[in-house]
Image (cartoon, rainbow, N blue to C red):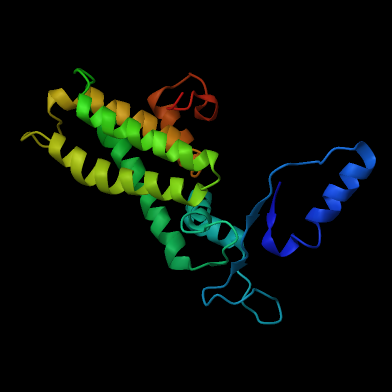
Length: 218
């Protein structure tokens, strides 16, 4: 069961009591309590205050994926969130970054062996993120894949892989970059489903949807 922390005494116990009364069984065994979404100053939104932020306005301006990441990263269970437009804009920039990474990697010929140390590093990250997801630490999982893609994959691994010929990658890196891109999209998909699915269809046209692909960690 997922609901706001303000309903713990108003709604959740009544659902449990009603379920026990009707069926003799509790309707759910785990309750995930999210915080409230407040305005940029941390004040509760209300029409009378005139500080209501329309999510549709933000998605039209920055995209649904950017808003989703804004609502997840840094938002620990039960913690209220101050919704700032500049943060949403920042995740739109991240979505553009993912697109640019994909375009660059997919423009290369895939023709080399995997680099073991980079694959092991990514697999350790995937296990870490999976553990966060299974423990309902979605805010940590989202933040980790964000930092890996932008700062480790783009800023370091891609830069190391570039050859002296402009726009080209060293042959020994190409298969590894494809592997990291493909599996990074899988890890990012629960948080940014639209851009990742679009890139996936560019990578594997006519194949299955990313949303039903096998998770990187078995």
